[in-house]
Every structure is written in structure tokens, then in C-alpha cells.
Amino acid sequence: MIDLHMHTTFSDGELIPAELIRRAKVAGYKAMAITDHADTSNMGLILENVRRLTDAYSHFFDMEVLAGVELTHVPPALMAEFATLAREAGAQIVVVHGETIVEPVAQGTNLAAIEAGVDVLAHPGLITEVEVKLAAERGVALEITTRRGHSYCNGHVAALAKRFGARLIIDNDAHAPGDLIGEELRRRVAYGAGLTPDDYRQAGANAWEIVQRCRCIR
Ligand SMILES: [Zn+2]
Ligand SMILES: [Zn+2]
Image (cartoon, rainbow, N blue to C red; front, side, top):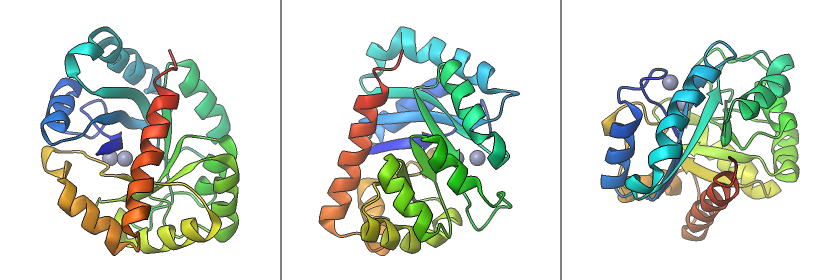
């Protein structure tokens, strides 16, 4: 299992990075990304501090840990600029907080994230066909989430992604220890969204490909 969308005390998560990493390892995850909610006010703070841990001590964790951000409630017109600033600040992976139907995310956020070429568009809600096609072209991964509320649109996201060949990944969007669900429930959430066993395996391969690509970023 791989989870590329997780939160720590650097935003609204409950655990410090070391504890989140340890708990993910014990829960059976083989790779993960720490992606705290960020805008330009805090991205430097998050990345400098998370990377101080992940760069120097990564070999002790016995799992791949990427340091990144989840650009959250960033005005769409500023998305590309903020994504660039995040990379310059040391983000190995850039996730965008997509247009979930349970939060007042600005319309245009999904499209701006895809056009900015971020790594993952999280919980994209009622994403449009045009956006999904563009995500497929740009190689932006779309997220199936096990998180309550955000998960309401999983079926819609999965159906369009399969129709237009966009890459899917499965994340927990973990904020607390209980969010690190096991393989069985994770698989059932995926099947509930309409993924087949092959799609489920492919989602794992997609996540692993992102880990391979992003861990080379220093
Ligand atoms: Zn959060
Ligand atoms: Zn999140």
C-alpha cells in the first residue's frame, strides 16, 4: 500500500512526522508522502522542517517517505505560481486540494491544478470530462479517497478516469492514526468506486511510479 496524501501537526494532522511514518509502516504501507495543507505563508516552514527529518534519517524509516505539500484553497489564478514556489522550497511532490463537494473550494481549482502539472489532484469532486482528458494528457494523477465526505464523488472520478485514460491513485488523506486503514477496507472502497481488481493493482502501480519519479528530486 502507498499513500501520497497525509497530514501532520504541520497543518491539521494529529501526529508529528516521525509518528505518522512509524504508524504507516506498522499499518503495512511501503511508501508515503507527507503533504500538509499549504499556501505561501507556510510552505517554506513545512518543507524545511519535514525535509530536515526525511533527508537526514530516511534510511531509519525502512520505507519511502516523500516530503511535499497539499496546496489548499489557493486562488486558481495563482496555482501555477504557487506550485513553482513549492518546488523551489523543496517539495518532492505537489498535491492540490481539489473541488471536493463538502468544502467551498473555488471553482476552477481542478483545472488550474491540471494545467499547472502538479503530481496529484486530490478529491476532485465533480470533475468535468474536459478536465479528466487534460489530466490524462498531462499525467496528473486523480485521487480516489477513503476519507469520509471527500469520498462521495469517488464513483464519478473513477468512471471518467477509466473512460478517458487518466491515472488513478488511492489515498487516505490521513489526519489521525485511525485514518491509516488496512488493505481490506482500502480494496473495498476502491471496488465501491467501480474499480476492478486490475484497476486496483494499476492504481498501486501508478502511485509507485510517482514515488520513483519524485524521490529523485533533491
Ligand atoms: Zn486537512
Ligand atoms: Zn488533504
